Image (cartoon, rainbow, N blue to C red; front, side, top):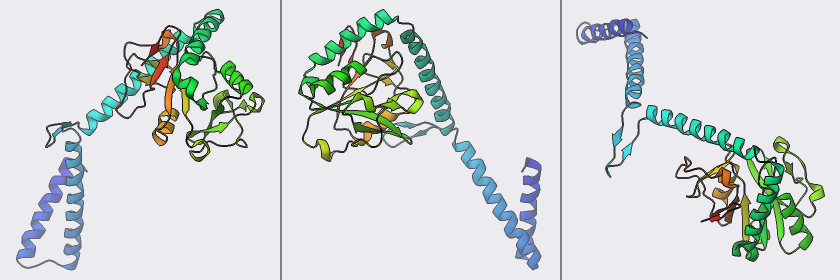
Length: 267
């Protein structure tokens, strides 16, 4: 409704009001009055909400609640920044030669083996590497060969990941976006089947920083899983070229407890 129509409606509401105080209204006029009032209240509420969307509020504890429009703008900026960082650092990772990847993977795996959390773990949850990610296929094969620790790997089910016990690497098959996944026929991880056992979750990522900030691949699979299962100790594997000066993270984003690169362990 434009401004002219609104003014005409208000004028008509006033006319009907004054008439109702004098000679009274016909049934048709009463229906018209009710309809105009309802429309006016609806329009008033809409305009008020639109104005409030652009106002910041100071709470009782003096914190500022940002306006809805600013939050939306900030969300867009935040997501664009993450997207740009992801693209930039993935390009750097993808540019590593096979020889460089092989050398760096050996160093990272050796640092992982040296961790007390890895040595003490009876259960390992690990991603199955894809593309230029820090390789875990060799690690998984070694774990299965030694049979000292139970191994669980993820499978995308709907909008989340679930972990399934792996007994042989031969049961992995291409799944979500071509990534090797276990079949649903395998034993699914539950808290009851690892109760009382020390566990370590090895997670991937695209960009990290020295405060253990992490950017994943955009779906939030590991954030969601760890919010449901906060008891797991976590370590992320990355190359030094994936460590940024800082990454944008929200308060509820999950930070790995440690990040292992070919040069160091970030805690």
